[in-house]
Length: 122
View 1 (tube, rainbow, N blue to C red):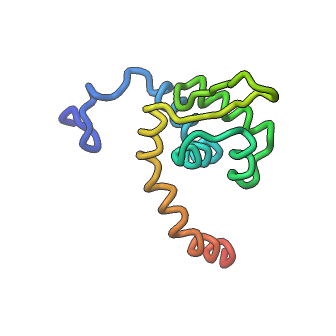
View 2 (view 1 turned 120 degrees about the horizontal axis):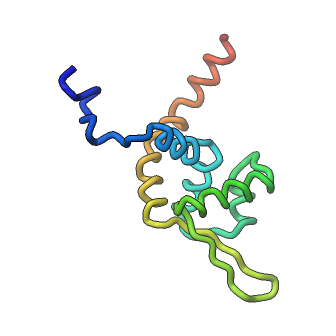
């Protein structure tokens, strides 16, 4: 080979492919992408996200939000009122993630009926 694979220079690839898999695992799960999608509309409270992300349990929402916060994709803001007001908002890399995944989400919506038909036929 000439030092390139699929058009990318080997020098541009990270030294540890496990790190790439780890990041893809975090940002590529369905709950993370749906949460990022809803947060692209602006800050949201936990209860708003719970209603917006169909099928997610309270525990899974909590776990996913914590992971996204840990990885710098969103911020969690607590306001000292009674009861406490907690909101979540995308960071700059979270907004970049939204931009990168928007075509995938749009593709999913566009092809949902085709996928359902293929599953039914299978």
